[in-house]
Structures are given as C-alpha cells and as structure tokens.
Length: 359
Ligand code: 5AD
Ligand code: FES
Image (cartoon, rainbow, N blue to C red; front, side, top):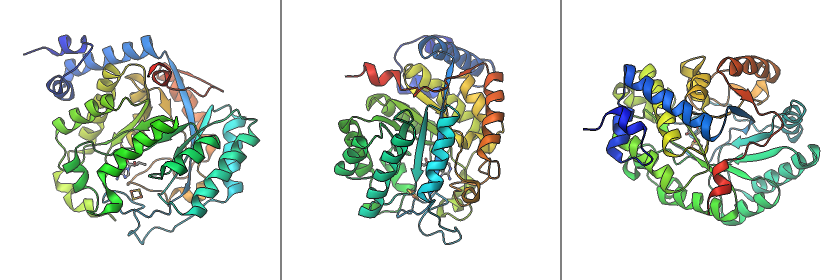
C-alpha cells in the first residue's frame, strides 16, 4: 500500500489514491495540505481574485431536493432585484477594483429572463468601460441562449454538476425531465463549445455519498477538463425534502474537513485551474474560506447582493453575511485574506490559467 507521502508526489492519481487522500487525518492530512499549498503557489501564485457575487433573483423553476430556494418552498419570499440595484452592485465592484462579478439566480429560461440578462450584460460592460469581467450562474439554458449571453459579454459560466455519480444525482433531484443528469452534462459541453471558461463543482458530505463518489467527482472534473471549480459542504435546510435524511450526515465539522481535503486533492490533480473558496465553508467555520485559500483555493466571491434580499437567498441554513453591507464585507475580507498569506489581485479578471493552455 502506498503512503500519503508517496501519493502526494505523483502527477496522476487513481481512484484509490484519491480515497486515501480523502481519508487522511492528523499528520498525513497536514502533509496533504502543505503539498497542495506549495503546488498552488508554484503554479498559480499567491494572488486571490475577487468576484463580486450578485444573487439577483431567487425565483427558480426547479425543485432540487437540497436547495432552500426550490420552487416548492413557499416559505421563501421571492424577489427579483431591479436593474438599477444590480448595476449599482456592479458599480461598487468596479469602483473597488474587483476584477469581475458573478450574476447568479434561480433557474428560469423564459424569453423575458433571457432578454433581461442580455440587457444587463451589455449595461455592465458599458458602465465599466468593458473592464469588469462577467461570470454567469443562471442554470441550464439552450445553446442559443448561452451563445447570445457570451456575445453580449459574459465570458465565464458556473454550473455545478452537484454529483458526477448519476445514481446519487438522481437521489438528490426530483425524478423528471427537468432535472436530468444528462441534460446538465450536455450544458457543460455547450458552454465549452460557446467559448466560456467553464466552472462546475459538487456538494460534499451529501446523504448517501461515499468517499468513492467524491474521488469519482475529482476524476470527473479532470475528465471534462474544467477551468474553474467551486465546491463546498452540503448544509441541510429544514424546508427541503433532503432534510429527512439528516441522520445519515457526517457532523458539520467532518463535512467541512472533507471539503478542505477535496480542495487540496483537486489542486494536486488540476494544478492550473481556478478554485473558489466556497461560501458554504464560511457557514460552518467563520474562517472557512481563508482556510481553503491556504491549502489550494485562489478565488473568493464577496457577497454584493443588496442586503434586503440576502435572507431570501438561503440555499442552506446559517448562510453567512446576511446583514453585512458590501463595504463591510470587503474590508474584513481584505484583512483576513492577507492574514491567510495571500495577496489580492485587484483590477484583474483573474482568468483560469488552464483555459489558455487547453486545446
Ligand atoms: N448546501 C450546500 N450547497 C448548496 N447549494 C444548493 N443548496 C445547497 C445546500 N443545501 C449549492 C449548489 C448550487 C449552488 C449555487 O449552491 O451546489 O449549485
Ligand atoms: Fe433552483 Fe436547484 S432549486 S436550480
């Protein structure tokens, strides 16, 4: 049997190797973290990039069994930020030299929605003289929509696969055409075809999920040759169907630890991609995102959603920063990132290095 020390020095990893890494504790885990930290510094450097996150609408046509803003949760007050509010948040990002923004929403695909996003993209480009990079995270769309948004200025897109194991995917989504694993996979290839830098990711510590499933997730990320990854711990939400399986869950701390090991293992597996320090880490540990930055992540998404809407964008419980305004978030973040030994890449898009080297 190989030792952790041997595995972390490899260039390629088998499923068994990855399971060993995900099982590390104590000194071996420290070893994994320190090799991943060194790899990050060697390959992508010490810079952390800011993406100002704007959760502009919580109206969603889907019913994912884990998500707090699922269509069937009638306890959520639905909102749709106005264009002016969204543009104001973008202006804040630009004036504070965040290199880019992420526009995220529930999943809708009506012509009105598609048109609206299109108009916003053009307006954001205009207000920032083309300087702000724009990432979209608006779910599954048609090839035409993805193409149109790309042409209007979006250049990165986030669409998590949630789990790359089809059986597990089926357990955490309703069993209908609107929640198809195949469709989601296909969207990832459409995005790539349209020219986006493509980001995906998974939830870690789901009920029914094994370490082998997570190792397969890592191998999946390599196989589809992603440019960016965002992945964080699953956090149960009382108003969702998956809550009834909470007895199967590892403790929050264990899910948190596992998420950090996933980030470190991913940095070894795909050294030149962008890895986000997921907000869900912060819901478990106030310094969670900084811990991820130390061991492999290089992107952070400060929340710029207007405060009045934040409590209605609770994908999971204990979502942090519910009542901080954008300024406060930024200032405290800055200090914490520097404490974590990183520098902030102000004014840069911070594109994935991998994107420019892939074929
Ligand atoms: N716990 C953790 N992450 C969640 N997401 C949705 N619901 C939860 C939850 N209960 C994540 C999904 C989605 C992203 C926007 O938020 O991975 O893709
Ligand atoms: Fe909205 Fe999953 S519940 S996309």
